[in-house]
Length: 221
Image 1: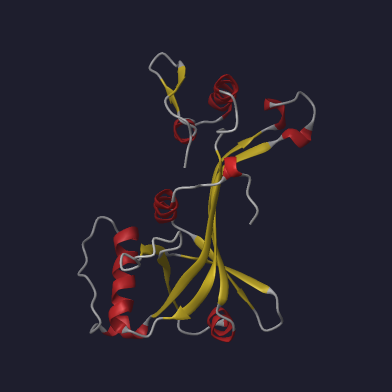
Image 2: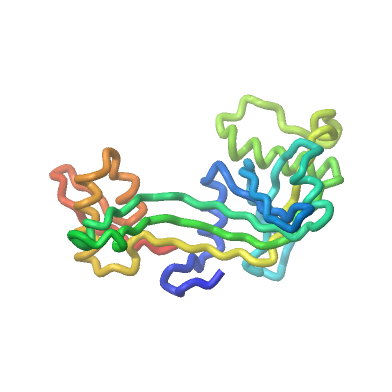
């Protein structure tokens, strides 16, 4: 993935935080005929604290899956895989930028693309670790007993582990605009969107009680 430096997420910590704030990722495998197959999945990114190399991809994507299916067949045959997570922040109509040129329409977004290899986890202890991490992400209110390798449900479910060899993040939140232009676009977003506060927060902009817009920070990831 070729990225302009001003659009790249440089912080690995921010990439990990973004991944684990999103509910759905998409895993890409190669089918029997050589076509990519893309499947939405629940997932969790677990940092590898035992990796002393401090490389950008120190961690794993865990997913749980039905033990049979085309996705599993694909990954057993060819473990090379891709994984993508994105957040659509806001569509920017063309008239924000030009009165009549439709090609000027744009989008604010965040995305992370991962390339690596995916395998089926065989260790029941590691499966339990992965499933507990998934539960901690998706059921933050708790009200469940942590799993261990002796649970029958752990033995029965299939857990996939994607080991990244490349992680790249990209974002466009107005960081490439001048402050005055970013505020101008923010005003237009307020007028068009029914709930603009979250969008503006990602852009580093705050709405004051008197509806004045101020830049609180640069949208740096």
